Figure 1 (tube, one colour):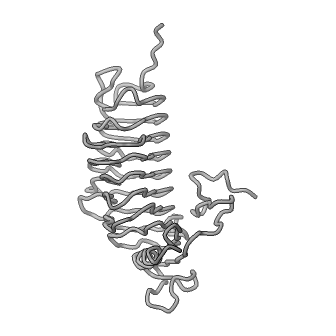
Figure 2: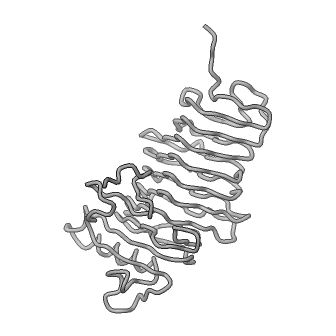
Figure 3: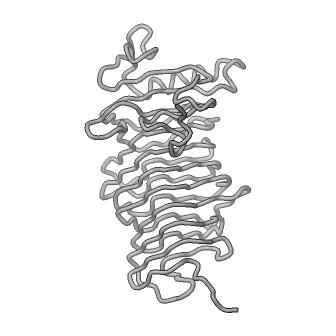
Length: 305
Protein backbone atom coordinates (compact mmCIF):
# COMPACT_ATOMS: atom_id res chain seq x y z
CA UNK A 1 0.00 0.00 0.00
CA UNK A 2 1.42 3.39 -0.95
CA UNK A 3 1.20 6.63 1.02
CA UNK A 4 2.16 9.17 -1.60
CA UNK A 5 -1.40 10.55 -1.87
CA UNK A 6 -1.42 12.10 1.61
CA UNK A 7 -1.53 15.92 1.63
CA UNK A 8 1.46 18.00 2.70
CA UNK A 9 3.69 14.97 3.05
CA UNK A 10 2.16 13.49 6.20
CA UNK A 11 -0.12 10.57 6.90
CA UNK A 12 -3.62 10.94 8.32
CA UNK A 13 -2.29 10.40 11.85
CA UNK A 14 0.26 13.18 11.65
CA UNK A 15 3.46 11.29 10.82
CA UNK A 16 5.70 12.61 8.01
CA UNK A 17 6.41 10.49 5.00
CA UNK A 18 10.15 9.92 4.89
CA UNK A 19 12.06 8.80 1.83
CA UNK A 20 10.93 5.52 0.35
CA UNK A 21 7.20 6.20 0.57
CA UNK A 22 6.59 4.44 3.90
CA UNK A 23 4.58 6.22 6.60
CA UNK A 24 7.42 6.36 9.13
CA UNK A 25 10.53 5.08 7.40
CA UNK A 26 13.87 5.30 9.16
CA UNK A 27 14.80 8.67 10.72
CA UNK A 28 18.43 9.60 10.09
CA UNK A 29 19.17 10.68 13.67
CA UNK A 30 18.06 10.07 17.24
CA UNK A 31 14.40 9.70 18.25
CA UNK A 32 12.74 11.03 21.41
CA UNK A 33 9.26 10.40 22.84
CA UNK A 34 7.28 12.89 24.96
CA UNK A 35 3.98 12.34 26.79
CA UNK A 36 3.07 15.44 28.78
CA UNK A 37 0.49 13.48 30.82
CA UNK A 38 2.43 10.39 31.87
CA UNK A 39 6.08 11.14 31.15
CA UNK A 40 8.95 11.57 33.60
CA UNK A 41 11.98 13.67 32.71
CA UNK A 42 14.16 12.23 35.48
CA UNK A 43 13.44 8.54 35.04
CA UNK A 44 16.30 6.38 33.75
CA UNK A 45 16.32 6.04 29.95
CA UNK A 46 13.31 8.36 29.71
CA UNK A 47 12.40 9.34 26.18
CA UNK A 48 13.46 6.13 24.49
CA UNK A 49 9.89 5.00 23.76
CA UNK A 50 6.27 5.78 24.61
CA UNK A 51 6.55 3.08 27.28
CA UNK A 52 9.07 5.32 29.05
CA UNK A 53 8.52 8.86 27.72
CA UNK A 54 9.84 12.24 28.74
CA UNK A 55 7.26 14.62 30.22
CA UNK A 56 8.17 18.01 28.77
CA UNK A 57 8.89 19.08 25.21
CA UNK A 58 11.62 21.43 26.49
CA UNK A 59 13.57 18.46 27.85
CA UNK A 60 13.41 16.62 24.54
CA UNK A 61 14.51 19.77 22.68
CA UNK A 62 17.50 20.19 24.99
CA UNK A 63 18.49 16.52 24.65
CA UNK A 64 18.14 16.66 20.86
CA UNK A 65 20.20 19.85 20.53
CA UNK A 66 22.98 18.35 22.65
CA UNK A 67 22.89 15.25 20.46
CA UNK A 68 23.06 17.18 17.17
CA UNK A 69 25.98 19.28 18.43
CA UNK A 70 28.10 16.40 19.71
CA UNK A 71 30.20 15.86 16.58
CA UNK A 72 30.39 15.19 12.84
CA UNK A 73 28.42 11.96 13.17
CA UNK A 74 25.36 14.12 13.93
CA UNK A 75 25.89 17.43 12.13
CA UNK A 76 24.10 16.35 8.95
CA UNK A 77 21.51 14.16 10.67
CA UNK A 78 17.89 14.99 11.45
CA UNK A 79 16.44 14.01 14.81
CA UNK A 80 12.78 13.29 15.58
CA UNK A 81 10.61 14.12 18.60
CA UNK A 82 7.23 12.41 18.88
CA UNK A 83 5.05 14.67 20.99
CA UNK A 84 1.86 13.65 22.83
CA UNK A 85 -0.08 16.05 25.08
CA UNK A 86 -3.45 17.48 25.94
CA UNK A 87 -2.23 21.08 26.30
CA UNK A 88 1.22 21.82 27.67
CA UNK A 89 1.83 25.39 28.83
CA UNK A 90 5.35 26.59 28.07
CA UNK A 91 7.17 29.42 26.29
CA UNK A 92 9.76 27.84 24.02
CA UNK A 93 13.00 29.87 23.98
CA UNK A 94 14.81 27.24 21.92
CA UNK A 95 13.70 25.20 18.93
CA UNK A 96 15.29 21.83 18.17
CA UNK A 97 18.04 22.22 15.59
CA UNK A 98 17.74 19.92 12.55
CA UNK A 99 14.77 18.11 14.07
CA UNK A 100 11.14 17.17 13.35
CA UNK A 101 8.59 17.66 16.14
CA UNK A 102 5.66 15.40 15.28
CA UNK A 103 2.37 15.73 17.13
CA UNK A 104 0.73 12.36 17.70
CA UNK A 105 -2.00 10.85 19.86
CA UNK A 106 -5.48 12.06 20.69
CA UNK A 107 -6.38 15.23 22.60
CA UNK A 108 -10.14 14.89 23.20
CA UNK A 109 -11.72 15.37 19.75
CA UNK A 110 -8.43 16.63 18.32
CA UNK A 111 -5.64 14.70 16.64
CA UNK A 112 -3.10 17.40 17.52
CA UNK A 113 -1.36 17.96 20.85
CA UNK A 114 -1.74 21.50 22.18
CA UNK A 115 0.97 23.85 23.39
CA UNK A 116 0.07 27.22 24.93
CA UNK A 117 2.69 29.96 24.98
CA UNK A 118 4.68 32.64 23.19
CA UNK A 119 7.60 30.99 21.41
CA UNK A 120 10.72 33.07 20.74
CA UNK A 121 13.62 30.76 19.86
CA UNK A 122 16.91 32.55 20.47
CA UNK A 123 19.28 29.60 20.27
CA UNK A 124 21.96 30.32 17.68
CA UNK A 125 22.52 28.19 14.61
CA UNK A 126 18.97 26.93 14.72
CA UNK A 127 18.35 25.37 11.31
CA UNK A 128 15.47 23.52 9.74
CA UNK A 129 13.15 22.89 12.67
CA UNK A 130 9.93 21.31 11.39
CA UNK A 131 6.67 21.08 13.35
CA UNK A 132 4.05 18.63 12.08
CA UNK A 133 0.50 18.36 13.42
CA UNK A 134 0.93 20.61 16.49
CA UNK A 135 -1.72 23.00 17.83
CA UNK A 136 -0.16 26.33 18.89
CA UNK A 137 -2.45 28.16 21.31
CA UNK A 138 -1.96 31.79 22.31
CA UNK A 139 -1.95 32.84 25.97
CA UNK A 140 -3.93 35.91 27.01
CA UNK A 141 -1.41 38.60 26.15
CA UNK A 142 -0.70 40.99 23.29
CA UNK A 143 2.13 39.11 21.55
CA UNK A 144 2.75 36.90 18.53
CA UNK A 145 2.43 33.15 19.04
CA UNK A 146 5.75 32.48 17.27
CA UNK A 147 8.52 35.05 16.79
CA UNK A 148 11.42 34.09 14.52
CA UNK A 149 14.62 36.11 14.11
CA UNK A 150 17.94 35.70 12.34
CA UNK A 151 18.96 32.95 14.78
CA UNK A 152 16.45 30.70 12.99
CA UNK A 153 16.48 29.65 9.35
CA UNK A 154 14.40 27.14 7.45
CA UNK A 155 11.65 26.68 10.05
CA UNK A 156 8.60 24.80 8.80
CA UNK A 157 5.06 24.41 10.13
CA UNK A 158 3.04 21.69 8.40
CA UNK A 159 -0.60 20.83 9.20
CA UNK A 160 -0.42 22.88 12.40
CA UNK A 161 -3.08 25.10 14.00
CA UNK A 162 -2.53 28.62 15.39
CA UNK A 163 -5.33 29.85 17.67
CA UNK A 164 -5.60 33.47 18.81
CA UNK A 165 -7.12 34.96 21.93
CA UNK A 166 -8.81 38.37 21.82
CA UNK A 167 -5.45 40.13 22.28
CA UNK A 168 -3.07 38.01 20.18
CA UNK A 169 -1.26 40.23 17.71
CA UNK A 170 0.24 37.84 15.13
CA UNK A 171 0.34 34.13 14.39
CA UNK A 172 3.92 33.99 13.09
CA UNK A 173 6.25 36.99 12.98
CA UNK A 174 9.48 36.41 11.05
CA UNK A 175 12.32 38.94 10.85
CA UNK A 176 15.42 38.06 8.80
CA UNK A 177 14.48 34.39 9.04
CA UNK A 178 14.60 32.96 5.50
CA UNK A 179 13.24 29.71 4.04
CA UNK A 180 10.15 29.69 6.25
CA UNK A 181 7.53 27.17 5.12
CA UNK A 182 3.90 27.37 6.33
CA UNK A 183 1.98 24.57 4.65
CA UNK A 184 -1.55 23.28 5.20
CA UNK A 185 -2.01 25.11 8.51
CA UNK A 186 -5.11 26.69 10.05
CA UNK A 187 -4.99 30.17 11.61
CA UNK A 188 -8.11 30.87 13.64
CA UNK A 189 -9.22 33.84 15.69
CA UNK A 190 -9.25 37.57 14.99
CA UNK A 191 -5.53 38.30 15.23
CA UNK A 192 -5.13 41.99 16.11
CA UNK A 193 -2.38 42.65 13.52
CA UNK A 194 -2.15 39.77 11.04
CA UNK A 195 -1.85 36.05 10.61
CA UNK A 196 1.72 36.44 9.28
CA UNK A 197 4.08 39.41 9.41
CA UNK A 198 7.57 39.72 7.89
CA UNK A 199 9.96 42.32 9.28
CA UNK A 200 13.13 43.93 7.96
CA UNK A 201 15.71 41.59 6.45
CA UNK A 202 16.06 38.45 4.38
CA UNK A 203 12.88 36.39 3.92
CA UNK A 204 13.83 34.63 0.71
CA UNK A 205 12.61 31.13 0.03
CA UNK A 206 9.45 31.58 2.09
CA UNK A 207 6.48 29.49 0.98
CA UNK A 208 2.94 30.05 2.31
CA UNK A 209 0.92 27.25 0.75
CA UNK A 210 -2.59 25.80 1.13
CA UNK A 211 -3.41 27.38 4.48
CA UNK A 212 -6.78 28.39 5.94
CA UNK A 213 -6.78 31.77 7.68
CA UNK A 214 -10.19 32.56 9.17
CA UNK A 215 -12.08 34.77 11.62
CA UNK A 216 -10.86 37.98 9.97
CA UNK A 217 -7.58 39.22 11.34
CA UNK A 218 -7.07 42.96 10.86
CA UNK A 219 -4.79 42.10 7.92
CA UNK A 220 -3.90 38.77 6.41
CA UNK A 221 -0.21 38.81 5.45
CA UNK A 222 2.16 41.75 5.92
CA UNK A 223 5.65 42.47 4.63
CA UNK A 224 7.51 45.57 5.79
CA UNK A 225 9.21 48.05 3.49
CA UNK A 226 12.54 46.61 4.62
CA UNK A 227 11.66 42.98 3.84
CA UNK A 228 14.04 41.55 1.24
CA UNK A 229 14.19 38.26 -0.63
CA UNK A 230 17.09 36.79 -2.55
CA UNK A 231 14.77 33.93 -3.55
CA UNK A 232 11.09 34.21 -4.39
CA UNK A 233 8.51 34.37 -1.60
CA UNK A 234 5.46 32.36 -2.71
CA UNK A 235 1.85 32.78 -1.47
CA UNK A 236 -0.28 30.16 -3.23
CA UNK A 237 -3.49 28.23 -2.70
CA UNK A 238 -4.58 29.89 0.55
CA UNK A 239 -8.01 30.89 1.89
CA UNK A 240 -7.54 34.22 3.67
CA UNK A 241 -10.13 36.38 5.47
CA UNK A 242 -9.30 39.87 6.75
CA UNK A 243 -11.07 42.91 8.12
CA UNK A 244 -9.10 45.41 6.02
CA UNK A 245 -6.19 44.74 3.63
CA UNK A 246 -5.80 41.05 2.93
CA UNK A 247 -2.19 41.18 1.71
CA UNK A 248 -0.19 44.28 2.60
CA UNK A 249 3.08 43.75 0.72
CA UNK A 250 5.01 46.97 1.44
CA UNK A 251 8.22 45.19 0.53
CA UNK A 252 6.87 44.19 -2.92
CA UNK A 253 8.41 40.75 -2.41
CA UNK A 254 5.47 38.32 -2.64
CA UNK A 255 4.45 36.23 -5.64
CA UNK A 256 0.72 35.65 -5.16
CA UNK A 257 -1.38 33.13 -7.09
CA UNK A 258 -4.50 30.96 -6.84
CA UNK A 259 -5.72 32.28 -3.50
CA UNK A 260 -9.29 32.90 -2.26
CA UNK A 261 -9.24 36.35 -0.67
CA UNK A 262 -12.05 37.85 1.42
CA UNK A 263 -12.21 41.26 3.13
CA UNK A 264 -14.89 43.16 5.02
CA UNK A 265 -13.65 46.38 3.40
CA UNK A 266 -15.52 48.29 0.74
CA UNK A 267 -13.39 48.79 -2.35
CA UNK A 268 -13.61 51.75 -4.70
CA UNK A 269 -10.39 51.75 -6.68
CA UNK A 270 -11.06 49.18 -9.40
CA UNK A 271 -9.07 47.43 -10.81
CA UNK A 272 -6.35 47.81 -8.15
CA UNK A 273 -8.75 47.42 -5.19
CA UNK A 274 -6.27 49.21 -2.94
CA UNK A 275 -8.55 48.91 0.10
CA UNK A 276 -8.14 45.11 -0.14
CA UNK A 277 -4.70 44.53 -1.65
CA UNK A 278 -1.38 46.41 -1.51
CA UNK A 279 0.81 44.35 -3.84
CA UNK A 280 3.10 44.51 -6.85
CA UNK A 281 0.63 44.02 -9.71
CA UNK A 282 3.28 42.28 -11.82
CA UNK A 283 3.54 39.44 -9.27
CA UNK A 284 -0.08 38.31 -8.97
CA UNK A 285 -2.14 35.85 -11.01
CA UNK A 286 -5.29 33.78 -10.79
CA UNK A 287 -6.79 34.86 -7.45
CA UNK A 288 -10.43 35.39 -6.46
CA UNK A 289 -11.32 38.44 -4.38
CA UNK A 290 -14.52 39.16 -2.45
CA UNK A 291 -14.99 42.52 -0.70
CA UNK A 292 -18.05 44.08 0.92
CA UNK A 293 -19.28 45.39 -2.42
CA UNK A 294 -17.65 43.29 -5.12
CA UNK A 295 -16.63 39.76 -6.05
CA UNK A 296 -14.13 39.44 -8.86
CA UNK A 297 -11.14 37.71 -10.34
CA UNK A 298 -7.93 39.33 -9.14
CA UNK A 299 -6.25 40.70 -11.11
CA UNK A 300 -9.28 41.59 -13.21
CA UNK A 301 -9.30 39.71 -16.47
CA UNK A 302 -8.73 42.09 -19.37
CA UNK A 303 -10.97 41.06 -22.29
CA UNK A 304 -9.99 43.96 -24.54
CA UNK A 305 -8.10 43.29 -27.76
